[in-house]
Length: 500
Image 1 (cartoon, rainbow, N blue to C red):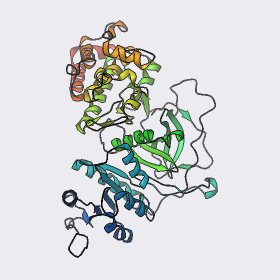
Image 2 (image 1 turned 180 degrees about the horizontal axis):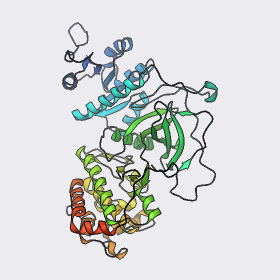
Image 3 (image 1 turned 90 degrees about the vertical axis):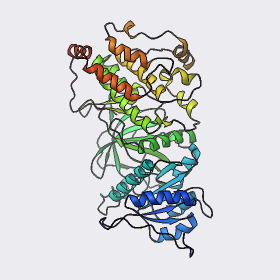
């Protein structure tokens, strides 16, 4: 701020840039504000700085910038109040807001989204994190601010209800809330791997302003994942909606928002991409790219154990995804066949479901809750005994999943978590050849190292497993296994044979 109280204005982007994008930066710490300002200016943005929300409010209301980045804890008016006041006049697609704070507990993140933030960034943050969020919000905002938007269905075709509050990253228009997602068929399909479809409607009903539901990928404890189409360009998407019964459960909301936060920060070929997310009429939702294919557990259930070479190809891709996460300091914590999707068209593997993911050094109150939700078979022994989850515990889960894929059996069976955990920690060392004779020694060596109980003897990084599996595929042993295995055909999926 200048002595006269006027906001400082950063040097504009180079003249070659066709009109620099204006960003408002609200931060009471001179050091943090100067760091962010210099970073943004170097990237070609025009930055306007304010020391607190009260100083910024009137100017932002009068002349909205392309993006607001605001700290939460500030004098006079904090970032939450500033966000609420700005949302009274500007919805999320017209004025995206990123809240920044050292407050990292789930309840603080929930409060930020409920106030109307598009995204949340925890201090201290890496420059790449900040720029990724800025890039995504500006790109999506430019697209969503177009004047020529498709027309919504007539009002009489939509339910008349109250106002809608959005908390999306690439947000959409503020509109009346959508009807509840269509009910599941009265009778489940005979084939439990089949995707449920909904009959065509005379007039489409748009969910969360711009998605029409066409089917259902599956249901879980957290909610339902629907097949949907984006109305703007008919792009197929996967629409994940938090279950209504969990809309008041702050732990469930925190898990859901954690998944959004993690996915929004990643750009890697082997992790499903997030396209949109939000909070609409009491429902939290997440929009992801539609991966037309099958979850690995469904593939094994339907086709039986996979060939050695196909197993190796799937899991080097899983380990590449885990390495990309680890490079960002993230631990997935829920690696299992149900969260590994093989694309039907070309065999590309994607890792999904990041509701338990966390930064390796981040404090968390969700660990015990998370591990009670169906991941017992894949928990590493050191985590059971109280150690923090890290990249090595994710790789133990890779070993368990790989064992299942090769044999169709779990290496540590059981009915209740206590029984399963006891076998993981002190039970007999699992032997895959007990269930499938003739497995290649080289592949068994990789599997055995993944399942080492001592994390120090286990693989330490995903890229190490990726390297060894690729090397095995190229070895004489791997080539012989390839020749002996039936060919895997990758074709475009049929409309009634797609999975998420």
